[in-house]
Image 1: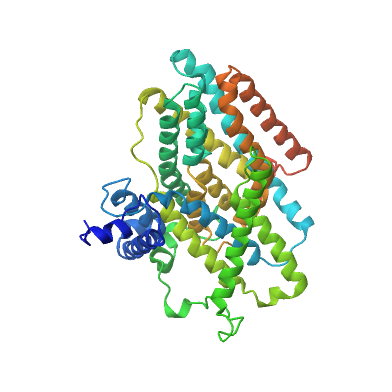
Image 2: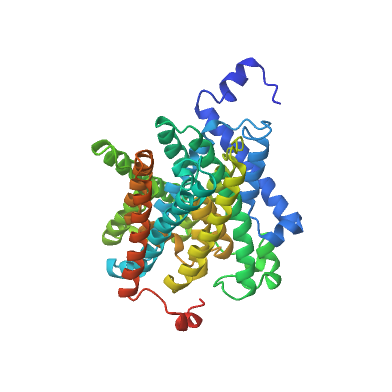
Length: 466
């Protein structure tokens, strides 16, 4: 498509060798697609009615015309790595844009979110895994014992977990695992957005959302995304003199430092204990919290503008969603079409029930905003969860991502243990016991939530709409 001559093609568009120009090309293409996505959002009424964000449109265009689609756009293979970096930037920025807090306040707020997150993880693995072992094996005896866990591998874990668990199973003799995991991950991403938009529209029309109203009565600027002059706001305050350092550069340096610190912590832990790999985004959030505490004590916080750091986080989120969707692999072969379809239907029912029923009973304030984030994450990826959250909570007033980042810290070791031991246990014929253990643990978490009075009884639900 591009006729720049052999020399330039090899240096700028040969994605087999990563160079700064490859990164520049990826960014140039994705920013171009973001502008195209914005134009489509402004001009196409159907897109406005579905509240599809330009970042998602950009991702779909990148998927269709990039290396995983028609191959017309020279996006590199590194686009699947960028979202992991951008998530670290997003979560590194969150504490820096938050007001002062106490550990006691955070613990009280995040306790129910932890119970919800940990329960949702274990319950999905347990229920669908047991369905595969008990029901599907009775219908299709030749299925691998671990066929059922391919759904949470792709839904809850995403393409990264599908690759990790798939390669582990392949090393143990089940080579189809990677294809099955990638298939459920790809379908999960589609369900995350399509189903999420349907849930959002239903909730908005039934007054279950806190920050948007009925879809049919939303102002035009929310549909098109263009603000009229009388409704525009300042994007932030300048806190440093440009003679010394530009204010945006100063804030960007702080955010990237938090993200980079998280990366160093994650790699440091892995170096000392190779079997433990903490998510970089969670570590970045913790580093950001530490930086925030230090800055509050040293008065540096007086020169940190919350709107500026929030804008950096939002910009990173837009790129994250675009790169995340564009990197989906569509060449996954569905080898077991019928049992896979059955597994997907059962899995969707389980996830819908888990997300919204337990979200309603465990999340008191802004329950729908936090639940829709969980839906996007537990069916697709965290990027999908963020995209859906941005629709129902454009200004991030629910603090859903702050809560999830903290709540996920104790969940991360459990997820790592699952990813590590699921292939081992199933390959040694112990999969049933592992899934039963997950089920028991999930029920114990519900019992703890009830004892801690985090569980909201049915009679009190009418008072917790918002």
